[in-house]
Length: 127
Ligand SMILES: CC(C)(COP(=O)(O)OP(=O)(O)OC[C@H]1O[C@@H](n2cnc3c(N)ncnc32)[C@H](O)[C@@H]1OP(=O)(O)O)[C@@H](O)C(=O)NCCC(=O)NCCS
Image (tube, rainbow, N blue to C red; front, side, top):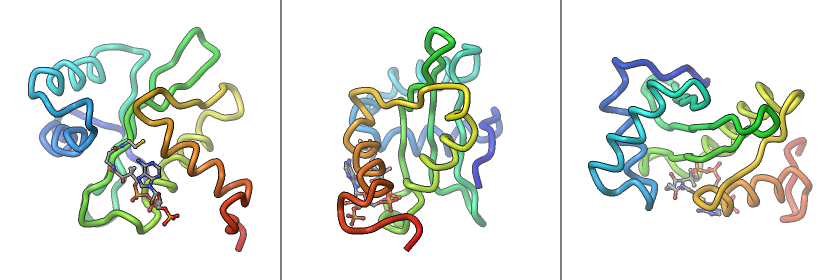
């Protein structure tokens, strides 16, 4: 399930975010996590099963859009549906009031999730 980031998860969250190609530099990573802690428009969620296995970060834009700007899963737990479940969780929280969209960093995976929802890749969420 998705839980909200809090300071005590800082290390695990930074470890997860560091898997994003744009977040490799420590300085960038530190400024990103600070932004999630301090900017009221930025919200970071963690995917928790027994352990914390993923992270998804969003930013409110113009009170209209929710931009999914970070999405990352522990490499040992990829291809098990966690990424899709995080996208679904964000949509369940926000899609009623906001347009949930991607940015350059998340576009490929969000498009992939959208294709799956629409059955374009031969599968569907219901099946
Ligand atoms: C992208 C990421 C979050 C997916 O998490 P996941 O839990 O493995 O995703 P799911 O198990 O729900 O879905 C797996 C599917 O997504 C596809 N996929 C993985 N990474 C992808 C990417 N960057 N772009 C498009 N599709 C991707 C897989 O090939 C797989 O496809 P299939 O179902 O047709 O076999 C994970 O690969 C990751 O942490 N990547 C590093 C961080 C990153 O680059 N994030 C930005 C992605 S645009």
